[in-house]
Image (tube, rainbow, N blue to C red; front, side):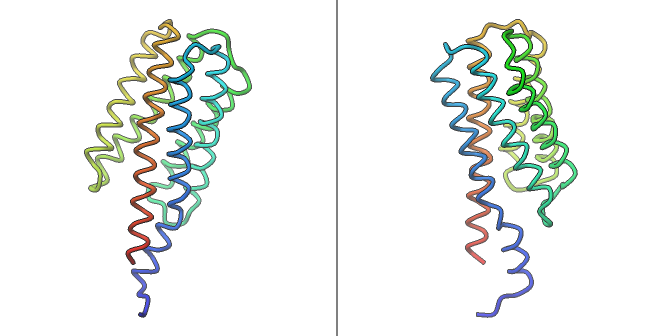
Length: 183
């Protein structure tokens, strides 16, 4: 069988599927850990969220450098913002719910806006991107509007956000893997 230029391009575009699957798995696990351990100290929650956000941000930056990544600039910007917030949460695991809530809330707002923009631009999985984007955006706005929310509420919102993010990114990675294998 002769590989066409189209097949080579599809294979190249989908070769980073495992990165998305890994980020999705990390996000899902971080969300489950946060939901299962909401009574742990706030600094622990900040560090767990920070580690995930730092890894996610770095992988987003790597993905933006991939030559066939669509919206490379937006992916790089989101990766940079995510990594910065991750470093802040790891480096300064603050003891106040309000500070952690503001950082995570701002990240959710940025993630929601970007995912909603992607929903407008992408035909495939438009409904999922729109649903997840609006959900992240609303959760971020709720958190930022009331940063003095209780720790349990913050843990639940963050945990659910990470789980939904993980499912979405993991499904995208698996879909890319399936497309790459079919060519």
